[in-house]
Image (cartoon, rainbow, N blue to C red; front, side, top):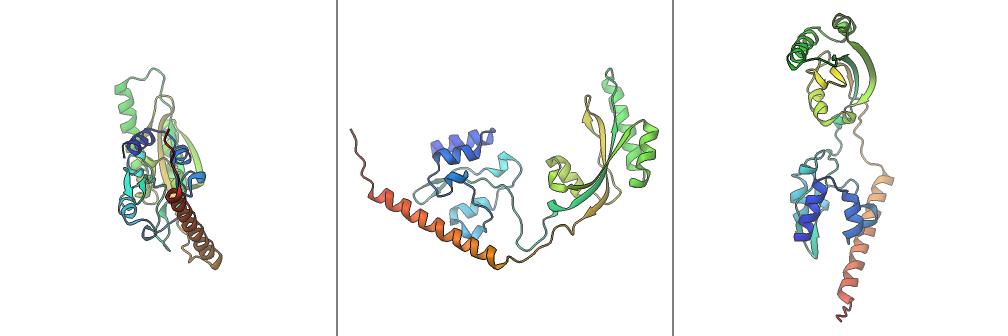
Length: 234
């Protein structure tokens, strides 16, 4: 447990989970960096399932479990992603966006920057949709860039949460830095039809059953090796 706790601390601090899994894991998935693929919670060990269902992907602090006691050892789980079976994943939605970028002068003061943020927010929140984005940007001396096909999941986590709650025509609050300038994203369209929930076909079900069978045999083989091993102390 102490060794597993040190690994958890390192991974949450930015170390590679895959590298640790390949080096220390005794599971049949060690060569794959511990990758289990898509699994249902009920397919996991009861102790593991109870912990995994509480994890949240996207942040090492919430996606990496504490060490979990299991039969024959200790498990550390990393949740990469979660989805509801036969349900559309909202993160797969295709967005049509306009980005308004307002450069900041190199010698801008903090008070001036705050005033520019307030002005930009007032203008973009009241412009009434993407149709006036170019005109509003021109009035402020800003530039406009368009992206008609970006997935919600490809946005940074903070922006993903904001964009997921916007309606068509709404804009984010201004964000950015001195080097990159102030930016605002305007949601011009959203296509959720890109995600279609479909039942698994025969080949997918067969492959999953076959993988479960191979993993079970591998675990039995490792168990037998440990049971029959002779340890010679010198």
